[in-house]
Image (cartoon, rainbow, N blue to C red; front, side):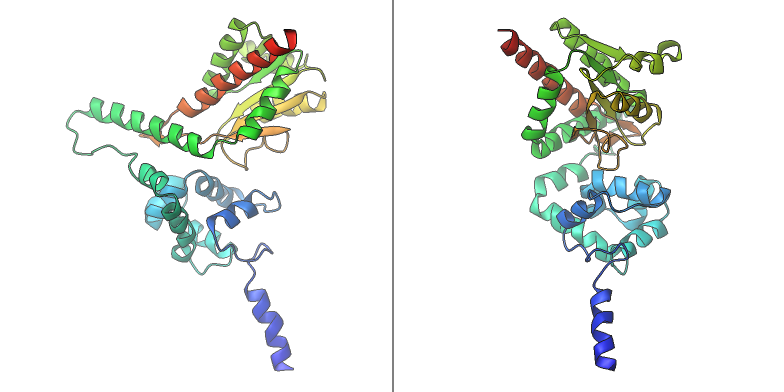
Length: 293
């Protein structure tokens, strides 16, 4: 009887608290996180977003450094690791170290985002740091870019009567630049700019023959997903540029692209997001030209 009881107990021990088998690789961990079946409280969700976006920094950092970057206490990282069946953060961190070893150039870039701290001129230090962050984000985009998703997003936007561009705060420069580019190429679009608190009125005209391109980055604000939810309810097709599977845009979007920007001195680059946006504008214009031709 004791042996029979021990078997299921041993089997249960091999499963994490979330009900999944203990992830044995970074890819398995990403698969669990992106499944949509794991729901975290606020602080653990904050950890999940950081781990998703910055695997190189997690692999190379101390628990104190990673906790500081994620904006949580070290004990929160330990709790997160234990949820997935690990005894502590060090064991859990091994997943990220193996991932970085398999793609060493990416890990080296993330570890090298900080310029030489001995740089005497603080202005030069800042410029070099911001440039390095932009380069790291663009390089990561080049490696993680998914052409099939991009093609699908371009098709959806090209087939719309009117394209609504939704983004606020840090994402607003991306949608504003996209608006200018699309209009220059003769593609009808509406920039939801919320001037005079009119965002809900602007999105209120959207219909089922229209499409919405929404842009949002962590920490995610409420107005962008609220506006996108209205458009979704009115039958518009939704595509998004965002930075993790935890974005509130993901459940609303028919298709989305992951774009993760790098940070330096509290400032995050927009280089990768603008690159994707410009490429989308060109792709939409090209498809419109083929249809009209």
